Image 1 (tube, rainbow, N blue to C red):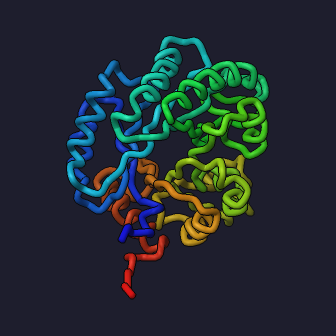
Image 2 (spheres, one colour):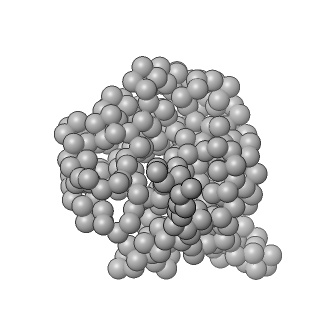
Length: 300
């Protein structure tokens, strides 16, 4: 019998910007991860993505591990050289997703730098309408991560998909069925937005989930506010933050959602450097527990 627990898989992200992603996969493939999201930061570095996909799949071998989503993070709306590389990277990832076994490409929308969020919408529509069609022709979905990258409604450098009000505007500009979200609770919590009701409203647009959490220091907020010198929130690996991931996964299941929750590491202020993989494996096991633990199949 197919394991229905794995309708929602728990995995992690794998940096692919520099050569050697297949080695990084091989090094952790036996730790229990059920999925990987190879991702690029701003550029693919001129790598042959068809060959890279093959090497990554070879590194996985016969293990029950998927790569349903690959990532391309940068600003494809602007015109600097690196921005153009990001836009080309999106095209290359869309065209070569199938070599990874992926059906989704995720990343930032991009943004017109230093401008109010709505000023990015015409360029957003121009770029993403074309990319949505390119992706649809190849059976690929596009998912926007909900990270503000220190931006806000008035200004920013990377992304407009960080706020549910922006999602309404974006999906009005690009009503394509294959454009949605790479959602995670952390990026809502750092702006004091309750993430759980979002799942009920937006599950149909959530194509991929990032496993990242946050710890909010309400005592700091009460004494110093959110614009003071003291940090009021920290990004965390799941299992160390404030999110009730049992509720997150339950709400996703109630919505009929299936896919991968891939841990986005390298942000936790405690479980970092030598403790990075220790923290990620804890997060992996914690999320599996929140998913309901080991599947039990009693025949008859």
